[in-house]
Image: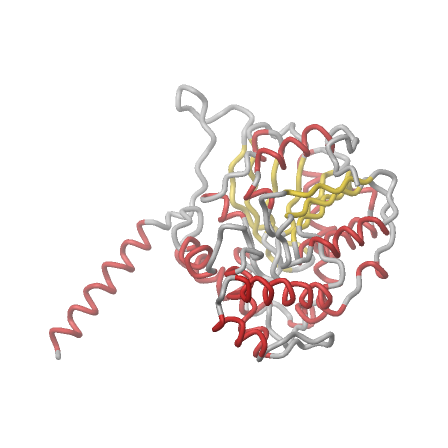
Length: 365
């Protein structure tokens, strides 16, 4: 018996050692053709006090004179910059990209954050405060604001509250009315699994339907990630499991220390706590009634197979939303994260339409 225990301890120590070696926690500089740090570039991981709480961010830019793009991640509590190790976006070639990790999440995780500040209103205020910090730091009067999923829920509200901070708003996997989206996702998945003969998943879904009230049933919540990714309507079209597609790759990300990798997952659990109600608040809010107009151009990037935040509902919201200029872009080979799934198309839209204040590449219907 002691031999088994010894082997287990040895393997555990070796695994921990490999994780430590694989977790230097330092962003690598951009380099020129001679291998020297690229002049005028920036590759950093910093923490800044935002509304009384230290919050972290990665800033990536091959030229800090390029326009600033603030990315507001999904979740609640799920930073996304680390996924660029597997899904490079190319954004840093043309923008100073700020991958902010929100209050209580990732680099910004701290169990001592006052729980009364973990509200949607506070996250919107944090978005505006981060924007003002970046505007001053980079000497740019306005930024581009991109919100993804949960980040689109707080991002579009921030853009509505302080349009003077932004050139344009880009919603990716835009939240509209999430309780309805869950029902559309459920219906799509049920048909998908029936068509593919997966009777086991059909039985699970039939036993755990969503409701149009919050909180969603625990049995449905427990099944949600598995059924969406299995049906190709989750994070990406090709990602079939959050374990192999998200959890395991997060431990391979070299720009987090080992402690920061642990905090990535602590922050996700913490931010989704029912104590704060962030998830339930987003689910129950009908943004089509809550934010009906923006004073800046609005662009929606949406995967054809996105039912995490359902594509049909996002299109309805877009049609209702008033803005001086609008563009809706369907990514035919994507689910919930087009900048990771079809980065060339996303970059072309950003460069040709968003930066030029046009919508020439937008869907025609």
